[in-house]
Image 1 (cartoon, helix red, strand yellow):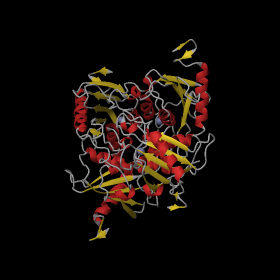
Image 2 (cartoon, each protein chain N blue to C red):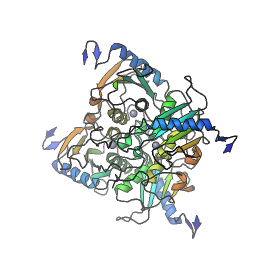
Image 3 (cartoon, each protein chain N blue to C red):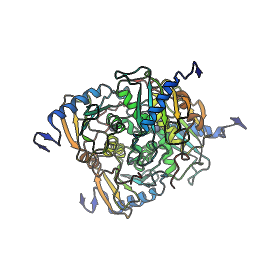
Image 4 (cartoon, chains in turn purple, cyan, brown, blue):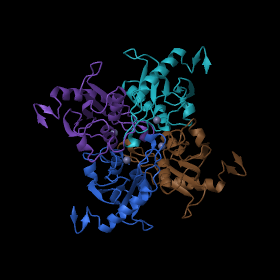
Length: 153
Length: 153
Length: 153
Length: 153
Ligand SMILES: [Zn+2]
Ligand SMILES: [Zn+2]
Ligand SMILES: [Zn+2]
Ligand SMILES: [Zn+2]
C-alpha cells in the first residue's frame, strides 16, 4: 500500500489536506440531537474549474432521526451535483470528535459505493489527526453497485 | 399572497432566477434507476460571500433504492454545510421533466421543515416553467421540527 | 366527519381498539438514542386469517440515526409483507409519550401514502388517549403515489 | 466454520428452513419500481410463544425511491417489535430472483448490526437455493453499533 511515499496513491500533502478539510467540515455539522459532529472530505483526481481539490460535507440531522443525513453523503451529493462522477475521486476522509477512529455507517458505505472504485482509500481520522485506512472494497465486501441492477440509461 | 408584485415575498426576478437555476440543477441529476430527473434551488435572503443567491441540488440515486437522495435534500445539505440555517431561506423551487407539477416527497418536506419557516414558499415548476406554490406549513401540516424533540445543544 | 356515531367510518369500538393496540405497541419501542417511544396500529377493513383486525409497529432506532425506522413504517412493512395492500386499511393510530398530539413524520406520511387512500383517517393519540384526526390527504397534500411514477408491473 | 455438520452453528435442517422461508417471503415483495423481489428470514435461537422459529420480510418500495425499505429491515423491524433483541438471532437468510448471490445493502447491514452479534452468519441464497455465507462482522468490518454512541437508557 505504501510505495514512493504514497498511501493508496495519496501523497503526504494530499493526506494533510484531507485531514484539514475534514476537520473544517466537522465545524459545520448540524447535530442538535446526537451532539455527534462528523466531517468528511472528498479528494478529486483533478482540480475543478475553481482550482478546488476537495469537496466537503458534515452531518445534517432532523427531529425525525431517520430523515437526517451523514457527512459523507452531504459531501458526495454536493460533488455529484457539481458534475463529478465515478472515476473522479482519489480518496475520502472522515473525522469525528472521538479519540477512536470512526468508520462511515453502512448506509454511507453503500452511497459511496456507487461512485468510488473498490480500491479507493477511506481515511478515518481521530480527533488528533491520526488515522486508519481501508479501501471501499474492504469496508463493503461483496457489495453491489450500478452493475447489478442494470441502469436504464 | 400577491401584493406589490411579490408572491409570498418573492419578486418576479427572484422567481425567474429560482426557475432557471432549478432547471440547470436538473441537468446534474444522477438517476439511472428512475430516469426521473429533479432539480431544486434554494433562494437566500442575503447573498453569500461569493455573491451567490441560490444553492442548488439534484437527485442522486443508488443501486439500493432507499439509499439514494432527492434534489431538495442535496440542495439543503449543501446549504447547511455552507453555514446557512433556519432564517437564511426565502424560498425553494423544484422542477422535474413532467408536464404536471411535482411536489417534494414527504421525506424532503420533513428535511426542509427543520430549516424553513412555515410561511416559506415552495414553488413547484412544471417542465415548461409554469408553477404552483404552497408554503412549507401547507405542504406539511401539523408537522414537528426542532421544537418538539428538545435539542440538547 | 361524524355521522351514525362513526368518525371517518371508524366506530367507537374500533377507535378504542386502535388506541389500546397503539399503546401496547409503544411498549415495544427500541429507542435508546431518542428515548422517544412511538407506537402505531393499522386497522384492517377485514379481519385476517387469524381473526386479527390490527397490525402494530414501534420505532426501531440505530446507532447511525438515519438508518433507524419509525413505528408507522414498521407496522405498514409488516402488513404489506402479510399480504395486505392498498384498499386493506380502514385507519391508522399513532401514540407517543407526550401530552401533545404527535403526527407522523413526513417520511412516514410518504410511506403510508403508497397504501392508504387519501380519505383514510390518521388518529393521533396523546398519552392520555385523547386524539385529533386528519385524513391521509390532509397530512400530505399534493402528494404523489404509485400513479405518478408509472409502476412497471 | 463447519463442524458436527453445523455451518456457523446452523444445522442442515435450519438452513433448509431459512431457505424455504426466505423464498416464501420473496413472494410478498411490493416492488413495482425495481421489479427486484427480495425475501429475508431471521432464525431465532428459541422458538417464540407460537412455536415460530423464523420471522420474515420482503422489500416494500415507494414512489419516492429513498422512502422504500428492504426485506432485511422489514424482517428485523417485525422481530424487534415482537420483543426479540440482541442475542435472539441465530442467523439470517436473504434471497432474490438472481442466479448470482445478492448481499444485503449497506443500509441493511447497519440496521442488522444493532441486533446481530458479529459472528452471526448471513446466508445469501441464489434463486436455485445455493448459497454463500459471511458473518455480520465480515460484511460490515470496523462497524459501530450501540456501544459507540452511548445509549441513554
Ligand atoms: Zn452514514
Ligand atoms: Zn424527496
Ligand atoms: Zn416517521
Ligand atoms: Zn437493504
